[in-house]
Amino acid sequence: MATVTDTVTTATALETVVLHKQRGGELEKLARQWLEDHCPYAYYFREVALSHDHGTLILEGRVPTYFLKQALQEFLGRVPEIVRIDNRVDVVSSDGLSSVRPR
Figure 1 (cartoon, helix red, strand yellow):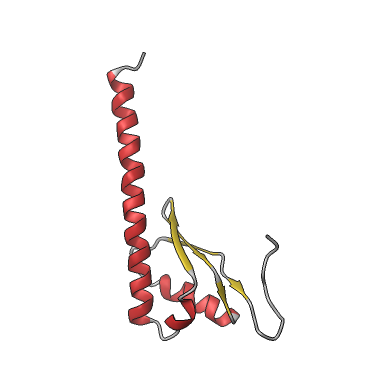
Figure 2 (figure 1 turned 135 degrees about the vertical axis):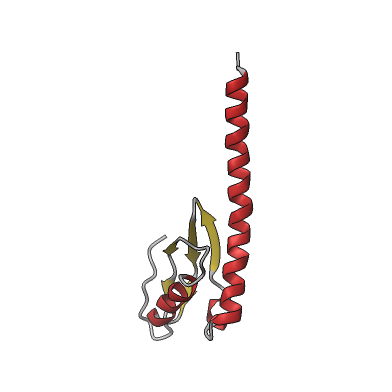
């Protein structure tokens, strides 16, 4: 049998999850807008997916050079609201060299 304390704790945990998801969506939009407004390489990052998990901005996708991978992380690191970045972006070059991980 659930007590009032259990119900309040469950409701608070659920509210926290919902709040994190809302803030995550806002963080992703903010990061995307920051790239479009401040980054001269934004064109190359259109296919990079941004997601949010427990305070970490996750970057996934492909770019043609290691420089662009680093530039992406560097530009997003300047956004004050972003605390951590998990850069999972692969470097895929047209000359056959790449960092693509097996899936």
